[in-house]
Image 1: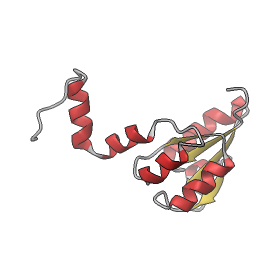
Image 2: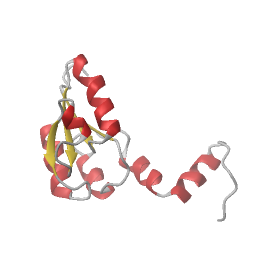
Image 3: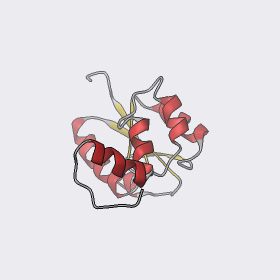
Length: 122
């Protein structure tokens, strides 16, 4: 991990802001992908790449600028994230993000792993 210097965050909202505030004192640079100028993460020192979270080119631009990628919002292009994960570490894994996007699949997975969930219609 010593060679990882730049963290990429998909989304620059409140969670991106908190991640940036935690990463900067540890010596990491932070780059966020966000469509909003002056997003919360940018306000505290993250560099922003302007782009939509579903835009595969914008996600690739982020990947090219960082050593590792994480997400702060699940509303994004998981197919593009899966391609990026072949060359840039992505945490959580794109498959996990895809499951989180689909609340039905999420509940099935939780139940299969013996984690209590409220009743739901299958």
